[in-house]
Image (cartoon, rainbow, N blue to C red; front, side):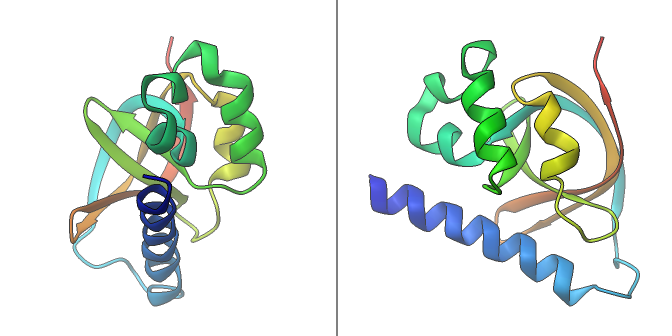
Length: 127
């Protein structure tokens, strides 16, 4: 199980970095601008700890993991969207203060090979 989780996290990181580098200095083609509302997730704990890796009881750990540079995502229903910023930088500093909380984000949503990503232009805490 640990190998699967580590492999999946590595895949998510690689996919996110590939999008950022492949499109640096270029407009994202066929981007689908959307507004999503969901929970800010620390991807590693979510995938490796199940229900204990999310929600209000996990806020402290999630914040620490996101601040340390582990992948961050927005969970909308059953779908996980790996998060980056629209300017091709990490979303970790922007999203860490919202770990385990509901946010509304707006940006370009992309999907390839079953992976979903949102390049965030704007984020706000959901009331």
